[in-house]
Amino acid sequence: MTALSQNLSHAILGVGGVGGLVGASLAHCGASVTMVVRPESLAQYPEQLHLESPFGNFSVPVSRAAEVRPVDVVWIAVKATQLEAALAAFTKPDAVKAIVPLLNGIDHLGLLRARYGAERVFAATIAVETERVAPGHIVHRTPFARLNVVSAGRNLLGRTLDELQNMGFECRFIDDEATLMWSKLVFLAAFALTTTAADKTTGEILADPQWRELGLSCIREASAVAAAEGAKIDADAVIASVMKMPGNMRSSMQKDVERGNAPELDAIAGPILRGAARHGINVPATKTLVEGVERRVGNAANLRG
Image (tube, rainbow, N blue to C red; front, side, top):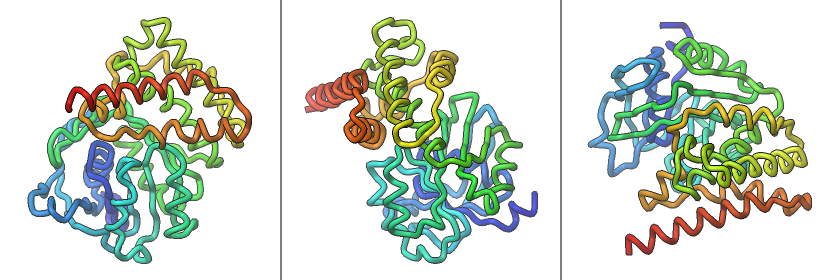
């Protein structure tokens, strides 16, 4: 157990796939971890997290609470559609040193900084496919988990990321926040919107010329918007990484639609559409994919009705 693991305490707000992966991994490294769950779920939430991952299969003890207790770091891993409700757990925000949101999109940063102070909110992104299959039971499906944090968080989080890196994560500190956030969004928008609109895996998308071209065009459009917003994005590099993705991947948006949950459509596509409108950039592929997702949401609702 390292000195960092003994000294830093962590709370996880959002105990789904991402929150469970981060919480289990931190606890496995020896850190003090509290999982923040809804009050009505507290009594039934397990005292251990069980993780199945390419990084190892293990169970680790964690604390549980219905509110964010005084800790060093709060990792927020809720869906963007659940953020406002989840923040009710912040009953003593001044007792928290750092907030690291791992939400999809960009707009949540402004909300959190306005509420809790810009100096305590560190922009971050995570790229991974992980799922909670039961309370406290997390299955990490991809061979990678890429965690990037803005460089302003290095002093507090440097050793934490070193430990996660040693465990198997790919961790980096990024100097430019716009580039950090848009780098994920450019990739994620194409991945989430195409897999959801088509209801196909990544391999099936890439094997279908029409869907593949829509996805690649979405990357180019989002990259153009990102550049107008001040980010440095290499669209060709993003496309190259997409072409190497495991063929069986499915997006969380796709799974949300299947389960009848509200998809994070505004969080993921909204910044691109609104940025395009501000800068006069044409984004027809992105709009086509958004319309496709909206149709699937409506069709799913009709089938359930």
